[in-house]
Structures are given as structure tokens and as C-alpha cells.
Length: 105
Image 1 (cartoon, rainbow, N blue to C red):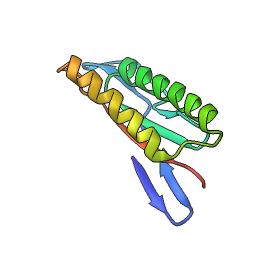
Image 2: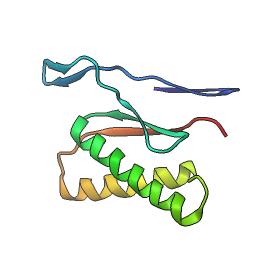
Image 3: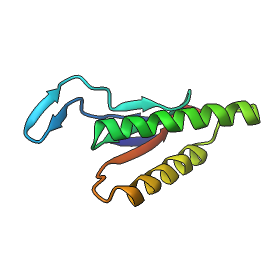
Image 4: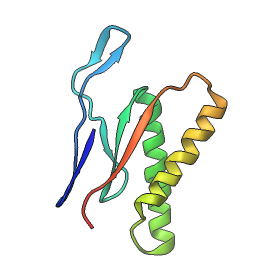
């Protein structure tokens, strides 16, 4: 969940990971930094969303080195969108969601 206010954005997430009715991890970090000021909230398959976040972090690092400036949130969102679409075209059962947030200016 994310809430925008005059000074920025507050991002919150639960910390439990479940497998059906079984809670497999009570202390998982579902808010992941993909750049210095860009974060994503992960929901669904922990392994899949972590892998997507890792790929986006790698692509944003490459983007920063190539252009010499921090990436825009739209760039991060575009990378996420392209990866998720590619995964969904290969795996029809992939049911996860991700929310991209920018903190600071």
C-alpha cells in the first residue's frame, strides 16, 4: 500500500510469506529498493517477484551508467512492465503484483 502526501509517499507492506494456509516466513521484506530513490512493493510469488526486482535493479544500474544520471520512475515502471508481460506470456499461471514508488526528488 502506498499513500501520497504533500511531503512524499509512505509505503507499507505486511511481512508474512505463506504457502497456502501455512506461513513459511514471518519476517520477509516485501519492499525492495531497485534504485536509490525508487522502491517496489512485492505481492504474490516471493521468488518470482524477487527475481523481477533483481532484473530491474540490474537494468537500472546499466541505465544509470549509460546515461550518467538517475533513472526516472517511468523508466523503472517500463522495465517492470516489459518483464512481467514477458513472464505472463510464458507462464499463464503467474499471479503476482508489484507497485513502483519514488521517494524524494
